[in-house]
Image (cartoon, rainbow over all chains, first blue to last red):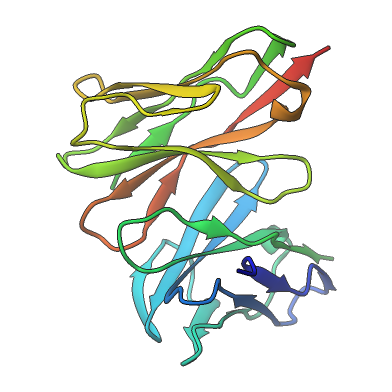
Amino acid sequence: KAGVTQTPRYLIKTRGQQVTLSCSPISGHRSVSWYQQTPGQGLQFLFEYFSETQRNKGNFPGRFSGRQFSNSRSEMNVSTLELGDSALYLCASTTGGQDEQYFGPGTRLTVT
Amino acid sequence: AQTVTQSQPEMSVQEAETVTLSCTYDTSESDYYLFWYKQPPSRQMILVIRQEAYKQQNATENRFSVNFQKAAKSFSLKISDSQLGDAAMYFCAYRSFNTGNQFYFGTGTSLTVIP
């Protein structure tokens, strides 16, 4: 099976712009979670989608949003980018049951 | 909310030696899962080992084993016969039994393996 894929791998944006990141889970996985990883904060949970519905949400401002499509692919959107949004954004997928998460390689977002 | 604490930001070990990475967590739940993930410089996070809280036996996966102390809320990772390829960032993670797939991660321990 192919692993979790994320596109693009690298992005450079300017403050105030918006960005959309994409995640394709492992085939058969219905749950996709998003994390923000920064050197000081580690991995911070953004949200989880399961069967096109947001099932869990972390403590991030409303500028961070996501969605999931019927094929389980997920997108994450960040509007009005701030310098502090520079981070590695990881997505992870599971079947939705009691199993471990499988991570993608991440998207490195740099906001200038 | 659950919290996961890794108090060792950096650790080092001689090749072929044994090292233990510490992790503690805070929860009021009785059923949960604990994980150790490894993130090499390539950035792909991979699962090292997992432990179900209802199992008393400590999980083992080849050279990796855990010391799970439920009462103390401690979950340490022991790496035996350390290899150069073990150099990575290691994250301890907690997952509730009941709240879907929300994982809580520690801030990580950077492991250096000295040849």
